[in-house]
Length: 211
Image (cartoon, rainbow, N blue to C red; front, side, top):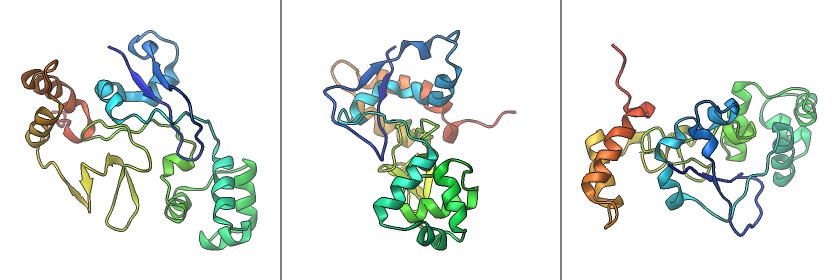
């Protein structure tokens, strides 16, 4: 199996001719790159779908939280004092974030996420490769679901969870959708269904509670 790894950062991007990587190391359980395996987690379950969802015009630019907060603030045209006022902290706290001395706490990250309209994962430098825990789609800020109040729900894509409700109320309904939309001459419906029946239950939304 080949893993197509989408290279993407929502704040920084450059045009590239091709940015698809065949990452065989993640398939080897003995690989020493534990961090890579942790970051990708079960995104490899539905890796063959990535070419359908993948944007080849994006490439990863690694950024730290301090750089991300500075860029978001300056793009919004806010001073440190103005940002501090909007998220109920001191100017000194904002300064410490931007020098890397500290990181915003959980509640402040939620306020920053709402203010800048980016996910908390993005604010933290995208330490995790998020995937929808219903269908397995790789998640970016543009397709992450939202709660009715507008906050990000980083567990699901916007096509599986919207307006506070799940679109697919049963695994059977999702399987039916995938079978009808993913099958082709090379991949007949019965094979599509068999594959998804084996893989989707590994995602958190469909996992059966342990007995």
